[in-house]
Length: 270
Image: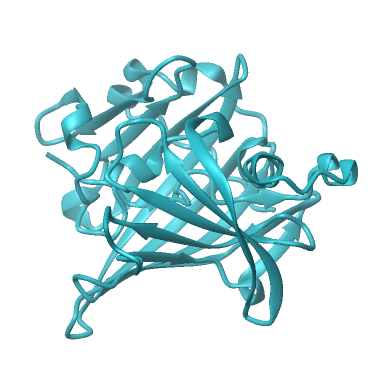
C-alpha cells in the first residue's frame, strides 16, 4: 500500500499556501484564535501547484518524485487531487482527499498497475507516504477544533517573531502533540514540530523558510518546504512551482471516478 507525503504536504502537502487573514485585526491573541488564523491562512483558498519531492537518505542519496495537485473548497469542505508524473514507475498514481465534517477525511489512491481505486484505512494513516517523511495523516485538512491548544510562548524563527502554539490532537493520531510556529507579522506557519508521547524533543520538524515565500493574489506562498525526521535521519524537500491561487476548477474533478479516469490537473502558471 502507498504511503503519505504531502504534509503537505501536509503542511501539510496539499494545502501549502498561506495568506493574510482579515481576522488578524480583531486583537485576539488567544492560542485558539492564533491557530484559527493560521489555519485560515493555509486552507481557505483554492489552488493548483506542481511539487518536486526530493527524498534524502541518511547517506545523502537522493530520489525524486513529481506530483501535480489541485485543491478546492466544495460546500465549505476542502477536496484535493494529486497525480504523480515522475518517476515512470509512479506515473499515473493518483491521490484523492475528501474532507468530512464529522469524521476523518476520506483518502483514496489510484494504482495504474491494478487499474483500481483503493481506500486508505485509519490503520494506515500513520504510514509513510511513498518513502517520504510525511504521512497520510499529514495530507488531511485539520481545523482548530480538532485540537486542544495551549500557549507555548514566543520565540524567533530565522530572526522573525513567532507565536508557539502547542496542539494535542483530539482525533486518533500518530502524534502526541504538535507545535506550530506562527509568524506574528502575517500568521504564516513557518515551522511545525511533531512529538511522540513522553518525549520533550520533536522527532520530526517541518520548515517553510520565509526566504522561499512569494506573495501571489494576496497570499504568502511557500515555494520550499523541508521535512526532517530526526529519528531516521532522513529529509524530504518539497519544491513548489506553477502555483495558481483560486483558479477555476470543476467540482467533478474531485471524485473517485475522475481519479480512475486519469483526468489531467489544470495547472496554472501565475
